[in-house]
Image 1: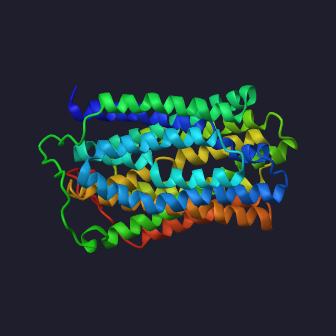
Image 2 (image 1 turned 30 degrees about the horizontal axis):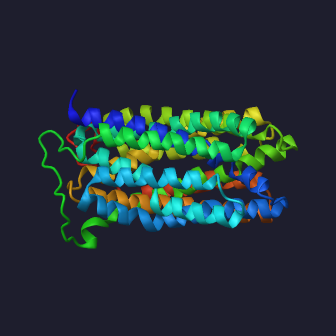
Length: 403
């Protein structure tokens, strides 16, 4: 098997394990807060928003830095660093006794982990451009396969042995993942026929990285990220509100999260192939329009099964958009700049993850949790309008991609 394929499949498996580990506890933070003694519904919503916001803000600061360090010191090293920090932080979450300690650890998680960006940088560095969208689509599927399995298992573990032990088990799984990457992944192999990026840093100008097409793609990615993540922190509370009880809510929340994550994984796999055959820009616009249309009735749905079906369909449509944006941004960049570009996109995604719970928390406190769902079609519409403002093209030798 070619080296880039071996690296891709190994990193894919490592990412599945990473997100199974995260899924053992993070989807149930709203319940964990109540287990720590916060019982007022308004305070629970507030802390749920804060826990997700601080992680996103810290990640927005750390991701571009880690991206540039990956270009300089090695991309495998950055992935190992992210996994090691994740293991320690997940274990620490099982030890907290106060919500403030949990907030501090979520900040540390955002600042020091970020396995998604680290893995993407490593994959992009060694994948031929002709296979880049497929590779990124496959990699994105690992995240959502992991998050489809993790919450289901984590929900059952949390209901059986408690939230703390669920965090500890997640940390042990992350430790095993560290050794998988250490022993099986090779650092930054050059793609066939292409020159490998230098391991030492080179000076570059900001305008060489931040171009008008990249700004358009990054802005669309920001709207997309907020749309995808704005409701996630409040899903557990939504389930609890509809069921009118907290008992059994972890299992139901894990089931919904698992179904949605599975649909997102399928989206990444399917759309990654389609994007190699058709115009990426046109495909993005069709998907955003379809996603906005499907999400319109969500605020009116009051049945959990119907909600799960519509929400899953939404993520089947929009789940593979981010890998396509990443591929367009990376294909024309030199190997020595890809870490910086992916770091910038990671910054935008992290900013979206930080803004989403702030906006969602404000809506939940001021109005209601179901009304958060009304922002999704609006945000997807804004992403569609943003892409319509420019015509970013991919420099791939494929006539189907020409506009």
